[in-house]
Length: 295
Image 1 (cartoon, rainbow, N blue to C red):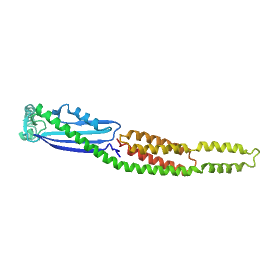
Image 2: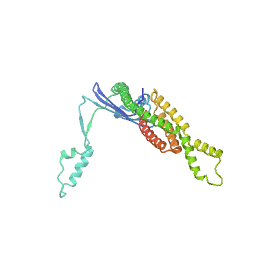
Image 3: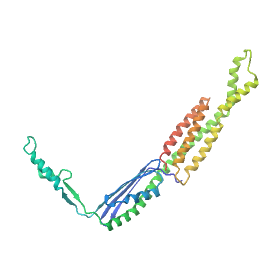
């Protein structure tokens, strides 16, 4: 069984020379494959490599990849934005004698956002190349971790979907039992209604009676719908055991399930059959909700 969910999460981190990095990936359901990447500016262009790797490993889902990198042993250097600080000093002098305004202090001015900034030396080209190579290998392993998480979730979904299919099959079998004696029941009901017309001048002939019953039976026959439902169950079993992504095909199959259930309900002249049809539609909707998250 290789059924996979589109929901998953994985994380990896480590050290390389002076670099400390953390790589996270999470995915949720989506009609197609969408990969979004957040990464450090100095790794310019690395997002293209990341997206290519993700596209090879995954078929569907909204995928979010977050890469954080800093230099573990790099000294922190602070730089003062002189232009901004001077502008603030000038502004403070302008309002120093204003009533209710306390004199500006240097520590307060330095605490204003953008006055003091952390300046780190950018890695050189060789360092960036080495880092990209190492991160590419880690990304490959990270995608395997995500695939494993999605497969584990798929296993849990598989058990649930199998139980839903079993319930749907049971309802279809119940519909077959109910439909078995419908022709006889319809004839008895039709004859019962005609008995009320026995004293009319032109009673219905036996031939006409047979014709009317035949028309009613044909209109109410659900055998074709039941046969198609059996065929859909077989197809669903095959898809759940397929080795390829089957989410879209299962979604289409649910439409076919629903179409047959609707027809069954529309042809039902028996309250028991109507109830079976409604219960079947409820299960089909629940089944479809689950497969929306299958790759």
